[in-house]
Amino acid sequence: MRKILVLNSKGGCGKTTIVTNLASYYAVWGVKTALVDYDPQLSSTEWLQARPDWADPIHGICAVSERVHYPAGTQRVVIDSPARVDRRDVANLARRADVVLIPILPSPIDIRAAAHFVGELLLSGSIAHHAQLGLVANRVREHTLIYGKLEQFLAGLKRDIPFVTHLRDTQNYIRAAEQGIGIFEMAPYAVAADLEQWRPLINWIEKKK
Ligand SMILES: Nc1ncnc2c1ncn2[C@@H]1O[C@H](COP(=O)(O)OP(=O)(O)OP(=O)(O)O)[C@@H](O)[C@H]1O
Ligand SMILES: [Mg+2]
Image (tube, rainbow, N blue to C red; front, side, top):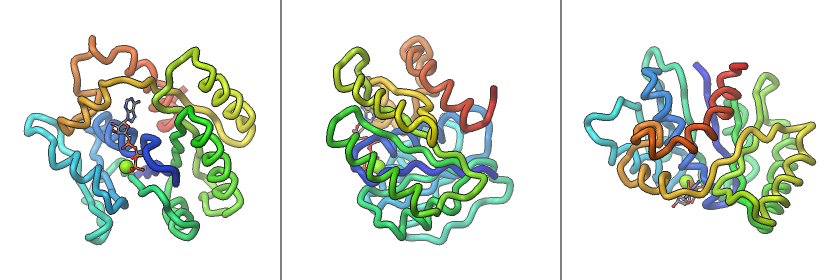
């Protein structure tokens, strides 16, 4: 079982978007997947409730109100976390993950907040020895000045944490979220550019060359 945690104490950076799309990717490929929601806002849980009958199954666990128990044979666990997590909660979540993904928005406030968050996370010593930690730039509009700044910031961190991919700012994620699906379940011609951007992320999580 491989556990992927999406974490950043900054609100609205794309944690739920990445969690739900990743869960949908695994579901489409027939991987037995559990989605664990630690956020009292219940965004991932509600996404799962909106999932249409035709979509491949994902086992939802609302960790806010129920005990976390994985069905037998679970292969991947994708974990959504709340914004404003305190240090102890971050440590408790991070300790159990095999993969920790940190989404960052290209905005000066988010870049500064992410720098603090990453620093604290590394100093906390809570990341398991074998775990991989990676950054994902989200809602990117390429060739903007601020994306250039985010790239500089990410390049500066590169020795410690890889910058795995960037995801563009597109209505596709919003449309998918409304319907309880991921981009992997939308018409391929509509999401071709997005699928390309996910490829390095999936490969990195799955350690494929
Ligand atoms: N790449 C993207 N393109 C367009 N919209 C996006 C993208 N990523 C996220 N969004 C939208 O931005 C909003 C915030 O994203 P999301 O809910 O995933 O963030 P979050 O980190 O889970 O927020 P919170 O901290 O409140 O849990 C949502 O409305 C989502 O649909
Ligand atoms: Mg969320």
